[in-house]
Image (cartoon, rainbow, N blue to C red; front, side):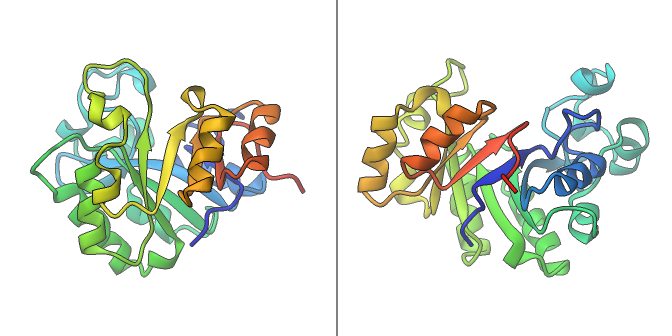
Length: 232
């Protein structure tokens, strides 16, 4: 499945909906996005929930970690849906880029539970997986090889962003189908080199139309954006 030229980053929340909510995904569909990017992690009771941050502080001022709160309470206090709810909703775009938020090296429970929900909702043909964790990408290939997988990367300074992640050292060995790169650290010439080598690349988070046009004109597969919707 080749992604469309534009993807809504955490849905469309610039109009007032909460990011990564059913309302933001519905708003994205209404704006013409055929695909939205979303983030998933596990709740305390082991449900796959759709939420970006490790804790609730930025969204509702609660300092608890998502992993310490049940899915039912997350929905009640913070309007956080489960992945199952999103996949079964008729109000969301037809295609979904599911980013797995995990930095674990040995625990593969998130990947297993995401794949189980996709099987149970018969959603495999709608899905693109993505993750910053190369081991998650490798596990998703093992569990559901027909669903495409994107390795995320940035050169942003962060203690957790090890040199081998910045330089994509593991990319050739984990069965990634596409790279999702931070556009701030990739020049047009860099993109042309990827394209010349036959490596598909998409970019995040691009909110300037001139930059999106530049990247697409030079071979980018898709633009993940907070604001830029497909041109009708």
